[in-house]
Image 1 (cartoon, rainbow, N blue to C red):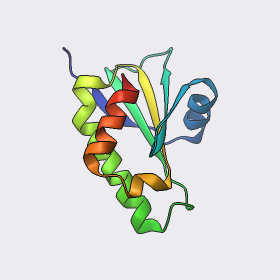
Image 2: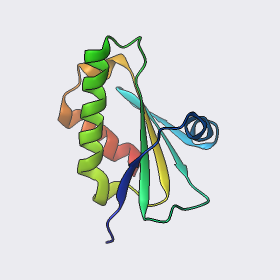
Image 3: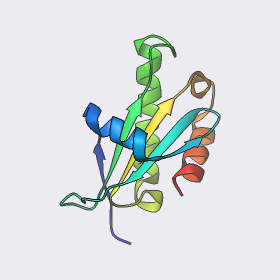
Amino acid sequence: MSTVLLKTIKKRIDFVKISKNGKKIFTKGFILQKYKRTSPLKENAARVGFTVTKKIGGSVQRNKIKRRFRAIMKDVLNNYLKKNYDYVIIANKKCLIMDYKELKSDIIKTVK
């Protein structure tokens, strides 16, 4: 199996495009939106974006959530993420009380 690079989504236009055209999968702690890009990047890359609103908590809680999701995505990168796909994770409050293993298993189920 070839290795997949992990890139981040930073532009609002990309988030909006994924939101309109992508497939949404709801779980207890987050919503995953995935979208197959029609124009592939030069590399074999999967792009990931994270959305954590201020409703969840202060900056400490929001950054903790993003760090956890980044670490999980790096763990599942080569085994589960597909090339030329965009993934956006929208966190909700319940992901603060969920443990790492539970979040990781939910991400693996939704990415497949």
